[in-house]
Image 1 (spheres, rainbow over the protein chains, first blue to last red):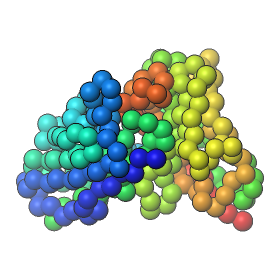
Image 2 (image 1 turned 60 degrees about the vertical axis):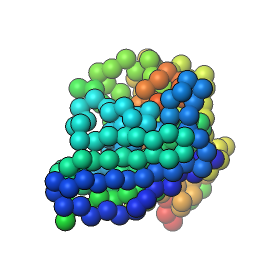
Image 3 (image 1 turned 90 degrees about the horizontal axis):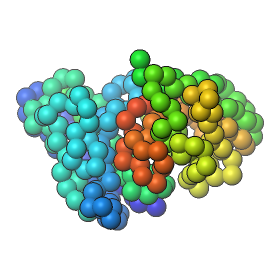
Image 4 (image 1 turned 45 degrees about the vertical axis):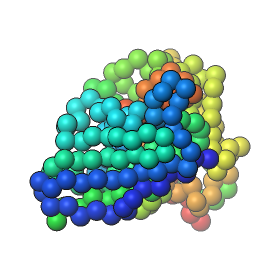
Length: 112
Length: 123
């Protein structure tokens, strides 16, 4: 199974400041088509997860451009250029390369 | 509107069975593979099962293989999860999620999630 490891597990950020979350996979997530099968989701309190980024760096429909995904192979990063109050919640990375599909432990973003 | 609505959760004793349903609306259900993902109280996300658009391909993690069965009825736009031999560690909120592709082998992401249904396994 592919193990997904996120860091940090908790992040406190002042509104307007940037934030960065790392995700590492135990094996490469590059498919033969050249794409990285790595997604980012945000789960707000009491809600189901929502897709932010797929295939490593493509923003999902309706996601603000302050969110960006980067990385390749086994190292990935989610960046928020300027954190807003509505960004609080738990962020998960997920590998979609192979079953069993696996998630990172989650990173809790708190506003200072 | 485009949505997924789960139902069927509840409290059940260890060793018993339960069936969850997920009703899809306002999209062409039989175009998409579908998945179940669960979340134990205060914990992270765990993938539970996947099924292709036509129901011919099914996948499970070892933790539920042989106990859970995923199925779909495309005529009723409904996804199901039959859970047998339930254990206390199966206690979780169960979400259904739409695959961006028609088969789990080509999964890119989950672009639509239901609100979840709670399953509690306790004596």
